[in-house]
Image 1 (tube, rainbow, N blue to C red):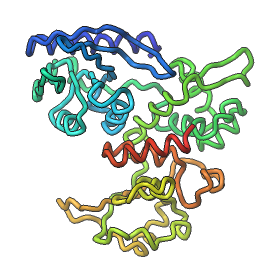
Image 2: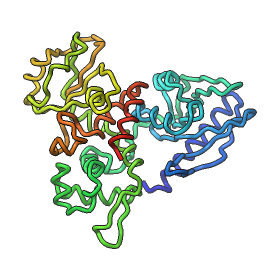
Image 3: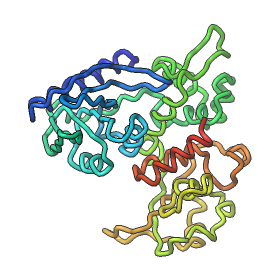
Image 4: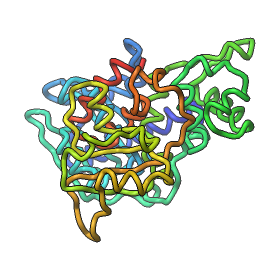
Length: 354
């Protein structure tokens, strides 16, 4: 899908959502700007509230029910000042609506569901069913670059931008993919506007690193991480990880533990461990972790994930041994959507991911 078609689809959703809230409660919202780029930040649109004239920065998303909601919450919090952002989607189910409201993220959808908190206007509508066209079982058309194999190549580019102009064979080796994969990922990134190509093939460069990173992080939990998940484990000991040496098991800390070590800011509760399945049994025994009982909702959750990347020397990862790359740590934190983790994630991004 090229950029113009994507924008057309997004603005169809925006117009339908504005129309739906008008039909539901008579609220007239005015779309005053579309596709605004300022200070290297793109905003899909700006909507103006009636009466008080407040302008809301809009993030639009198609197939929102399949989105990484943690990434959506983080995008909206970074898009505008508190209370001045608006998430617009094709459909927001009741569970999503509750979670967005708890995070104080205002939203509209094309079915008339909404949360608006702008004095004197307060609206909260949930439970409206989408039209048949919206509920159709259709996969998210993210492009080949955001399918599992393509995402490995994109991660390699995000981790090392110089790799973009390396020979295809070297890119394939660093990404851990077949040689033929590299060409179609590069062509797809060019078609989507993420990659620019000069006259010579060694003149490729990223058009917008931050936008590509956001897109990768949003797709990561469902498209890549889930496919490499070994399982979820638990413990009654909140300090279970403190005495564990991941290097002994060829493992790496991710998620909250890695973030705590990178930033010295977060007190970890849940854990994410990247480890080969062959080393899992020894690790579980050493860390005294167990599988949750059926229907148990453990207070502490530890995910074990098999690595998908080709390892680099530890010193190349921000000088930290035993930790996954900051990009993966960042993606793990964003997935949770929890305020404390989003705050830490943005600190991590500012310090390490540029």
